[in-house]
Image (cartoon, rainbow, N blue to C red):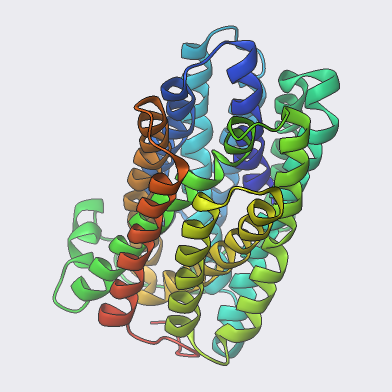
Length: 380
């Protein structure tokens, strides 16, 4: 929830900064992209670290990192300083997300593991809702700086986690010798795991590329389509509400229909919604397809976080999940930049969202052709 609050608030802050700092679309794109550059480094580095020092320790380190850096970014007076701190926010977020899902997947029985991980990820929707509410009630009256200071508060949660949260039982029971980082990365491409790794990397890249390209720009898209900043925040809040049923329906289906079915189906729904949203002209159509985009995309995210740790044994699970997420974050770098550059060049939202639609279809093909079903299998 705190992760999503931080990413979500950024989309609203970008829209406010664009007005206050007179930012061009390209500069707005860089704010979203530098977050993803940090996430790529964080997912890779902290994923490797979690296989060495434990899931719980890395979980707390990343929580403190992104919370403190986000709070400090409220004090910046220039775009350069803001971008530097957003890199560190991204590093913490990028490391925390795959490590949290690995910790939970290793702590839950096989018959309910997928459902529980998707429910864990459903708190992403709660965080986006908190971000939308902060943006709606705080930014217009008190400014974006106060909103960002609020995002520093989760750092205090680490004190509770330090005392109460147990580490992964599978990690603590794993008595195998700890390989070096290079050996772990090499294992991902060994004969046994290469197909799984290729599938995950393709899916992660296409999903993150499209998600950050679309969702970080949602409030700005509404402004550029002629709505006021406050009205845009209001409409995005309505769209965001659809994330919760998206997660809950995916959580219900994932132990019944399986990971591959849920992931492929929800990604196809995302692709269709993206295409229709990009070409919508009226307010009811924008809200309808924006809501469907939220519903399907976040359901797919939940399934992906459940599916990723299940591809690898305990010794390389966080490394494998972290590297797949890192490859995804590379997509997250290009998504917002692509939107900014195409808008600057005069292209419309129909073409832009059509590109995201095509990318997601490639992800669907990777799941269907390369993926293996892991429903209710015991983890190695």
